Image (cartoon, rainbow, N blue to C red):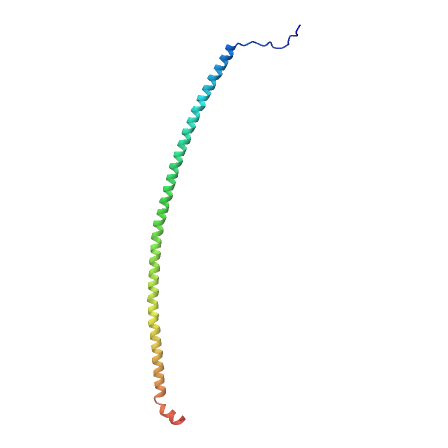
Length: 136
């Protein structure tokens, strides 16, 4: 005779119980799948809201940067206008000084020329005959 196996006796399961187990597993998988689908939709919604918030933040940041840039330009424009005015005033002052120096130089050259002529006239005047007579 055949020898019997020692240990647990195998229990026989019917096809119906296999089908019931499969159906139960399908239902569990469907519930899990539905839960995961819900989580995925929720996550997609969160990602979409994050994108929208990022876009809004980016627009706000660009607007703030633009505002700061415009304010800086406006402030610098005032300062550069004042600086240009100071330069124009300085140029005007320098031109006036140059004109004054030109008049002064002209005056001094005229004075030197006049003194030179006076000296030449003085030298020629009283001693001209004497020098010619003496030195001949």
